[in-house]
Amino acid sequence: MGRLFGTDGARGVAITELTCELAMQIGRAAALVLTKHTDKKPMIFIGKDTRISSDVLEAALCAGICSVGADAVKLGVVPTPAVAYLVRAKGADAGVMISASHNSVEFNGIKLFASTGYKLPDEVEAEIESLILDYPEKIELKSHADIGRIKDYTQAADDYIHYIAGCIDTDFNGIELALDCANGSSSGTARKLFEKLGAKVHMLSAEPDGTNINENCGSTHMENLMAYVKKYGCDAGLAFDGDADRCLAVDENGCLVDGDKLIAIAASSMKNKGILKKDTAVVTVMSNLGFFHFAKDAGIATAATKVGDRYVLEEMLDKGYNIGGEQSGHIIFLDHATTGDGQLSGAKTIETLVSSGKKMSELASVMETFPQLMLNVRIKPEHRDIWREDEKVKACMDSYEARLGEDGRILVRESGTEPLIRVMVEGKDAALMEEACRTITAEIESFVNR
Image (cartoon, rainbow, N blue to C red; front, side, top):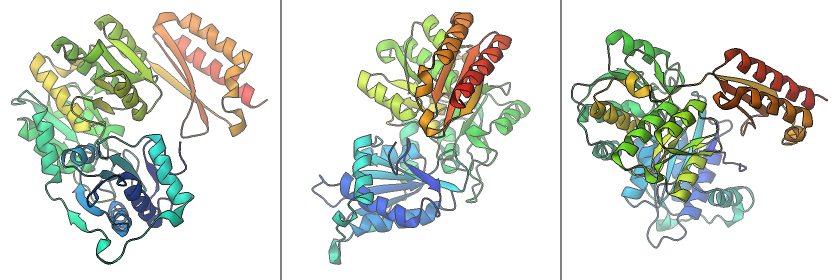
């Protein structure tokens, strides 16, 4: 993790932590690093979500970008994947998305995309950080006619909708959907997209006021959508997060269909069509044990990465796979997109629903979800990593892994964002799961408190 950029861009409480000054500096440094090889006037696209702070940070980014001679092109409120798509489709030199994704309104973030539409590799982010933190004197400001211009790209959302609709081969006529937009970026695109595809649409949490993004709605708060779908007899529900790069679903009975099940549905469909590359799906180590059992039964290989969509994408690009994602609903259809895209994932799910002739609950039954239990242990920096080598901890974990067998799993890992060790146990035997989780947690606590 970098000094400014975490696993998904720079993020913090808007204005006080992610300040206007920092946003302007990121705009300057990113413009210089990402456009240094261009032989024309550099052009950088900027999208944003619906947070009250996004306009302020957009203004600061535009000022920074233009001050070093690049043009800043404002896309308006669009999903994060729209920025990724439009950058490569329209030949921009780079893209910026202003969003803190599924976080609450006080937070905001800055995500950067290369001209290819992919998020930046660590070494490029490090170069931008170094320019800001170590060598700010190397940033040369322009003057006279050499400064950049601020422009508006008013067709951005419509062009993105047109592209996603073109990725779907089936008409959704006769399908009734409830869409929860988290009062975020999809509020202006989801209705148009799914009505364009032929569905009858019910909209939830699609009235952003700048302060209500992700507030008891969207993919992190599924309760309202689950109740609505069941009450009004919809065929399915789809929920997006604040910047619409994630999607979770609800079946016709109001039951949650999480990211693992959506990946299973997609991978199974793609395998049946003969388009699942290398018959493999990429997930993270946090995916439910039920997914791995499903994959084995379906003849689908699995590749498990560290937690984080960037690691999923790296594995897909490195090995030539075309479907992957996370339990949280961040799913990458690499044949169509360079990043997770909630509306594409939702549309692909409904495409499979329609073509199969099944109900959503039948599709979701492709995999059994094993119960999961997770407990956290707070650690000090000096205890990071070394707990793994403690003989008592290892013996405790080995003992319970043997008792759980193939119908259970233990995963103990350090959080990448907090000073915590996360102890997760999955299995079919609830009593044994709880005993394992609490005993392992207690053993680790005993070690870190010695």
